[in-house]
Length: 426
Image (cartoon, rainbow, N blue to C red; front, side, top):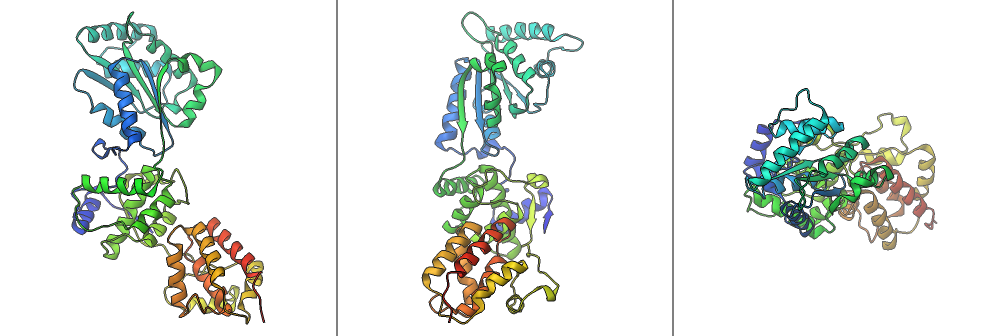
């Protein structure tokens, strides 16, 4: 269950528990948290150079949550008052609406004027600013939402120039669909004007994610014991796909879970629970967050649903459900029949079988799978080296209960049914 907190409650909870000055993993594009990774620094340097040398039209593209907006916010802080920025985030604009919005932001009167008249006024204003040693830059976020007509209309703004330089600097920022759209034959005029294109990518290694997390914690003044272990960072990498926004939401939710549990350290198990609650799967580049965008969350560990109809469970499921703290995910009738092959007398399960089981579990729940599997074996009072084949079905059901994603859970169960088919019985 997820409950929303107010900003004040969320801030107070984190401050008192971890000693933060503020929430370290918010999803708002605060430029103070700009991460100095070479990829982002290269993009920032390219845009600064483009504006200073008046390249005219620039493009930044990247998947959802890769840090495009925070890059723009950081860019606006790189210049003094000599550069006047017009920031547009409402990209559902017509060509007329975009020009009108820009004219209004610059303090020019655009009421009851045609688009041509507004462009003429804008041209006069830009020449005046050039004479005063000033530069005007138009930043359009979420530019993939612009209509073809609006993108085509940017050509008119890009054509505002002197014999030596462009009068207006335009930065288009959007998802990869924007690049696809610009490849249309009808938009070749605007595409040919792009002087700089920088592509942002997700973080590529767990080491980069570790540095990213430490950077965020440093910004909020944290200098205490390690909160995210290496195993936890590996889990974050697994579930976030390296996307900064997904990292932030996962970390924020896991920290809230740690607070609720009275813990000062985030475990891989908490990350698995957080990922399940946020609908994240391994390697996901985006996250379905809806109301969670505010990042103000209190996460209560979800409990997988247990089938209450006793008549629909077999003996193995009933035995496992008697164990405290266990959540059993019932199987379909056909799968129960196949799985029951394991509930026969036979030799102890081999270590190699558990290696394959660990691999299947890792595919379903991430790098914390080996630890969870070990915990469930211990909960049954057994060991990997002498695990009886007759209790294997019970173990598989226990591990299945830890897999929150239904598709992943079904994949794990299918893999184990296939493995069971290879076992020898006596």
